[in-house]
Amino acid sequence: MVTGLLGRVLYVDDEPTLVFLITRALEKLGIASQGFDSAQEALAAFGREPQAFTLVLTDLTMPGGMSGLELAEAVLAIRPDVAVVIASGCIDPAETRHAAAVGVRTVIQKPAKVAEMAQLVSRLLQELRP
Image (tube, rainbow, N blue to C red; front, side, top):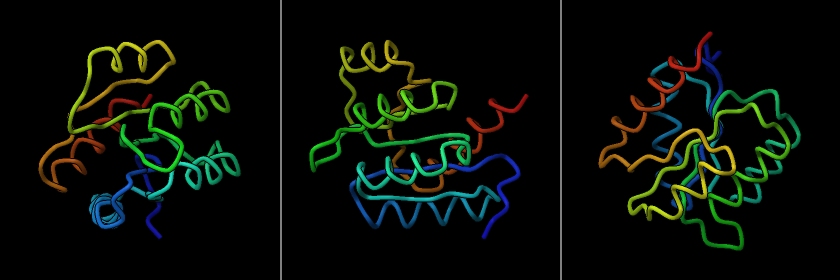
């Protein structure tokens, strides 16, 4: 497992293939990551080890009863200081305002390429370093 010198990322997207590709790309950059294609499973993992994660990155649109925004709210209720980022291919300004109001660090447009997403996460983690 990657040691995660920059931190450990919890990555959530409803596309299992994307979860696999993004977590592998992060590991190639030396970033430890744990990926889930279910918001409920991701929340359970976060709840078991909330201090283990530096950054939570979730897709906004997550089928199955819990959206990325709802996941963000639940994560921040457990640990208000964790950096939460929401990614989406289509971002509504009202959702962006709601996300900011609950403590989401930023809402980003999903890059078209896996490598771009991994680089974006790497940059976010570097910005979080003290």
